[in-house]
Image 1: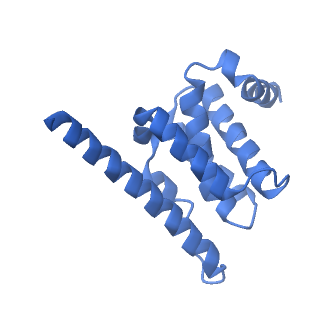
Image 2: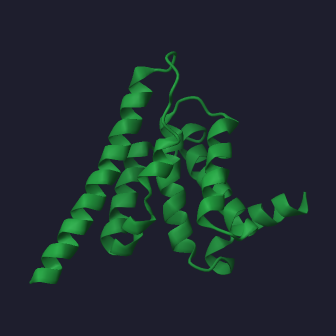
Length: 153
């Protein structure tokens, strides 16, 4: 109970209390883009996210803050409708341009864990999710090519 409250508190005030909060927030946006693209909002995605967060972070508070922050973005898209996936991806793109090191925070293997896998799923959802993954792959490729060209110049 206290652990959940502390995670929610840290998530709300992440800019003040979390070291490298921008990196954590960037990851949350990337994960939210995949989770929100699935029209079904259930706990399976958050269980997957928590396992991924455990691979990324050792600190249990950072793990929970990543999950809570991701939930905030997903809620803004699905429940509140104050954000849409296109706007979120544009924001991610802007952050990559401002902080090129953020590209290293994207892990395609992690994103593929969110792909819908059953035959009864809306094919549009699967298509959208694969397009999001392709977008991130292209951004990673572009960043690598830019770094190589920059290094040769």
